[in-house]
Image 1 (cartoon, rainbow, N blue to C red):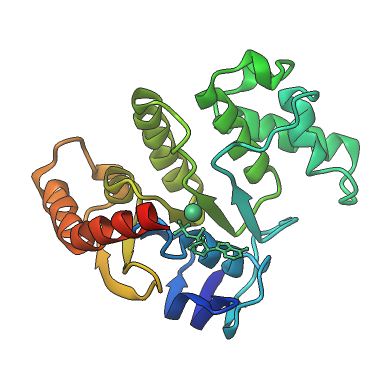
Image 2 (image 1 turned 90 degrees about the horizontal axis):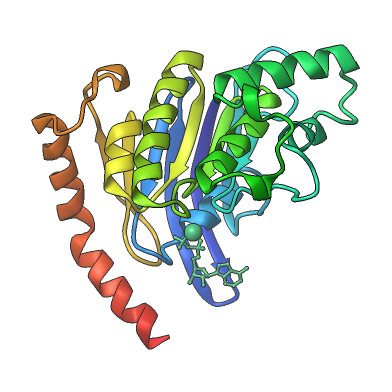
Length: 255
Ligand SMILES: Nc1ncnc2c1ncn2[C@@H]1O[C@H](COP(=O)(O)OP(=O)(O)O)[C@@H](O)[C@H]1O
Ligand SMILES: [Mg+2]
């Protein structure tokens, strides 16, 4: 399935947050969305997912969702959003309840996503027994359980410490290319954008407009740490957002 955001603008009252956004996520493509805080990244993700009606413009889903897809556009949250009183398995089962899937099929899906995220040994654990990194693996497993077409990821690694972030980033890279899923991936971390994305969309500060779209011309599976080509892309992106980020930061502190 292909996701298209066409001429999207959004206002909260008098505040224009994003303006004239044209953006596509192709099938099996990961698009990173970067830009200074407050430029409307989360707003755009909500619009992409249909949670928020844009002031102007339209979102189109083109083509068929994957087979047995229960929710084409599925969120992955920064704070994991797990229910503390449910086990790992229980948290995943929740999104499969009332979907018409039989018990056996639910269990097969749970087992598959636990396997894909390295959680098979943790199915009976409760969130409070798990590290942040493990909780986000559960977040990913739960999202994959519905067999989505596009993952909508809002700074999924931002709540984690630096080492865990790198480890999960590598896992995402492997997982995304293995299952060929699409994602719209919001981050303010340039390393994540350069490691994971096929294309990186750079937004200006508020009102967020598309400043630049950079295609990373190295297959995700072939990207390695400290690859000079990737460092070049990172530098290009930094040049794009540096001034905007500094200006946005100053504005935030004056709010
Ligand atoms: N529900 C809302 N009502 C009013 N203003 C909002 C609402 N949500 C976000 N904003 C404002 O819109 C701007 C963009 O927010 P957001 O999309 O969260 O940006 P980002 O994710 O890029 O940091 C911010 O100035 C924020 O304060
Ligand atoms: Mg945000």
